[in-house]
Image 1 (cartoon, one colour):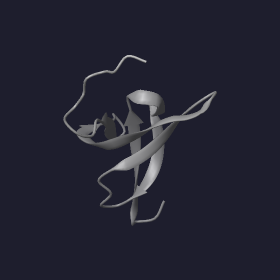
Image 2 (tube, rainbow, N blue to C red):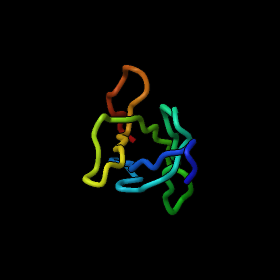
Image 3 (cartoon, one colour):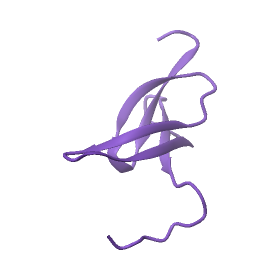
Length: 73
């Protein structure tokens, strides 16, 4: 890892407890969530202000827009 990158840990949704490296200053990461049928969705993760015991910043899933109601399939 270079000085221009940082390790984060994704929580929630399909990437639960996954660590990855991002550029310093990144404010959002888009992660495709795969299913046996292909990619089901893309989840946005943003910094939560929380940290793991080892100091790695925790990012949590974020819902876009203001309509959070579920639509029956």
